[in-house]
Image (cartoon, rainbow over all chains, first blue to last red; front, side, top):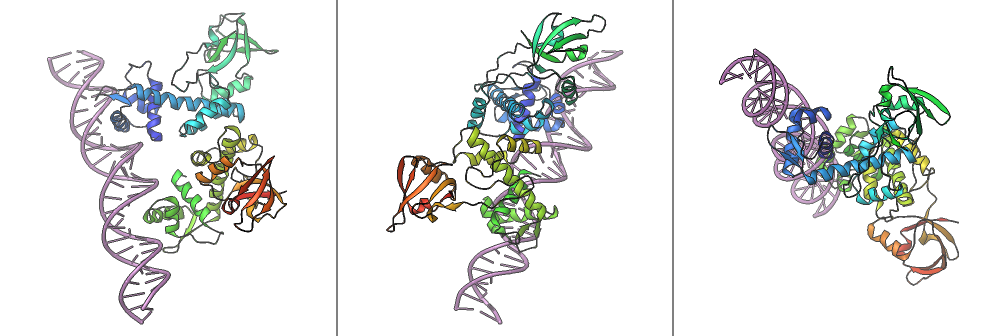
Length: 217
Length: 217
DNA sequence: GCAATAATTTAGTTTAGGCTAAAAATATAT
DNA sequence: ATATATTTTTAGCCTAAACTAAATTATTGC
C-alpha cells in the first residue's frame, strides 16, 4: 500500500459521517488539495483493490477492509502525536506535520510497542480517541467548553479547531491539555465566559469556548 | 530531497573508504539491488544538485554538501535504532528494517529532541558511532573481541556482521550490548576462546570473536 | 421538460524512478 | 597492439501519481 493510497483512504474516512455515506470526488479533491481527475484515477485503483466501493458519478465509500486500513493509519497518527507531545516536548501546533509522516511507517511491532511505551493512551493531544489494534474506537465523552453552565468544571481534553493560530493562541492564554477549567460565570451579552484555572481567572470568548473540548468532572 | 536520492547518498557514503574515493556505478547498483543504468540516471541528477561529483565512466564521489546530507541520514538512522532497542524492546536483528524507514522522516526538531530524549547516545546498538548534528563522527575505540589476550576484559559494544543469523545467534548465547566479557583463555588449536560473562563461562569460536566488537576496560 | 450549470470522467501529458537492450568506453589478455 | 571482455552509458519503455483540457453525465432553474 503506497503513501498516496493511505492518504486517500484516510481522507475518505474523515469525510464520511457514517459507513453508508458516499463522499464526492470534489470533496476528496478539496480535502487533499488535488484535482478531481486525480481523485477519479485513485478511486478506481482503490476500488480494484476492494478498499472502496465505487460507481461512476456516485462518489466513493470505504469497504469494511478499507475502513480498517484507514482507522489503522489514524491509530498510528494519534499514537505518534502522543509520543511527540509527551516525550519530545512538541506543542499542540507542531505535531501534525511530523505525525503525517510517521503514520506511514510500516511495522506492526513498532506500533504495538509504542502503544505500550505510552501506556495505552485513549486520546491524542487534540482530544481525539485513539482506535485500538482491532479498529474499535470508543466514543469520546468530551463536550465543548461552551456547553458548561456556571459552576461546572472540566478537564481540557482537546480542540475542535486545530489550526496553528488557535493552538498558539491557547498556548498564549496558558491553557493546555489536562488543565482543570471551572466556569465561574457566563456573560449573556456576548456569550463569553469567565473561567478559573489554577489560581488564575480569564475571560474566554464564545468562539474560543466553542472550539475547546473538556471532559466534565 | 526524495527517499530514493537519500538512499543513493547513503550508499555512496558507505561504499567510500575516504572522501577522495570514487565509487563505481556497478558497486552502487549492487549495494542498492538495482541496475547500473538506473544508477547512472540518479548519479546525474545528484550531480546537477551538486551533491556528488561525477564524470562519465569514472564513478561518483560525494561533495562536501552531499557528505553532510548522507551523514545526517545516518545520524537519524542510528538514533532511531537506539530508540527502538532501548525504549521499544526491539532486539538487534529487528531494528534495521524499521530504522530504514524512520531515517527519512523530515523534521529537525524531531531528531534533536529524540537525541536529548535518548541522552545524547554516542553509539548505536551495533556499536557504530552516531554523528553529531554538525556531521562530525568521533572515531570509535572499539576492537574485535578476537584481538583481546587472555586476562583482558571488554564491554560488548557492537558487531561487525549484523546479519540476522549472527544477531540471533548472539541472543541465543546470551550475549548482548553492554555485557562485560573477560577472556579466560585462548585455544591455539582453533583460535576459539573461553570467556566469562557474569557468572557464566562460554566458549566462542574464532569466527564469532572476529565479528564482535568490544571496548577494552 | 429542456437549457444552463455543475460535477465527474476520459484522454492525453508530465515527472520520478525504475527497467531492458544496445552502443560506447575502458580494461585485460594474449 | 589488437581482440575480447567488462563496465558504463544511452535510448527507449513502463508504472504510479499527478496535471490540463475536453467530453460526458447529473442537477437545477425556469
